[in-house]
Length: 450
Image (cartoon, rainbow, N blue to C red; front, side):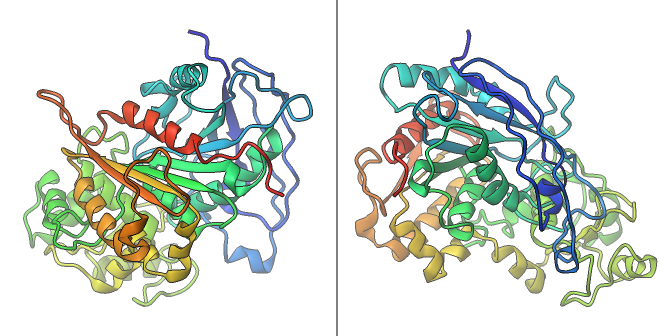
């Protein structure tokens, strides 16, 4: 099948994506055909650093792959800017895990356009007038080392939040014939991507996205009695069981779990998720001593201090280029509150507790859903988030259907499978993506904001 307009873009995001810069040139705009499949590269960006910006440089010890593929679906009737009408854009953020593609990209996740066959779905829904024509964008943004970036700026990985909130949106607007303005952009995601989507709306540039959706996403880290938070027995016991370690065996805890890396998720899934969360939310600071008075790991004695004082200090490798992170879970299975609070600061439920952030949902419609048999505890987390959202937004703001709902309203649903095919974390996502497209289609403006 020939897709109407599925553009596969290999983007050398270079210094800007992962290091940040104080000054940069606009990227050269590739020649974009009105339809078909095109592969193009953007040039490296000028990276001019100054004293003030040096403290903000991320990934200065162990580089993530700079080549990141960006997939862009161009709808039927698309023409470059100046040759046809502009289109609104939906940004899709992918879930945890990396899946190297056949083009040699080591940090790829093509679940939407590959496994879930999103391009032909878009073709059909547009042709049947179920949705309006739209541009759909998906960038490969997993951490190569941990599988999950949680779309967060971290000194242990890279500037993944900024990559979406600033660079990607600006790059797409500069390169493609998009409608400018918040109400003409939407953001959505599955799993980790759904977390990232809500984080973009609550913590990012408040002019970026006008509607948001999340599928089976981790939206409530803390255990509010549901038994599925990231500090719950479900995850802690799973961490020890996956590594064959008993509680209190600190030597083996260090030795065995440090060998965990399997970002392709063929095994040790809870271990992978927890380590990725640690790299994202509680990295060792590489420029100054933090509240635990730990020395920078690039210094030999500092590394020795960390290793001797904290059995829960981990690195992806023993290289001095790996800053590592402090785990909030000890070898005894207890929680270190000071580290756990760093994780909770990134919890969507925590962000929602800030009135100024919660107010953003007053004009941003939200759709979220989860399968009843989600094996990662996301159902319980979504229910916890729903309870908090209902308190913050008010029960009257919960819509009875996602079709026809108003801005400032939210809609949540749970879906079931059938015998032999449960609604777990990855099944029925193709069906949910169709709902996501219909949801956002009703809110995406086709005219630029005045």
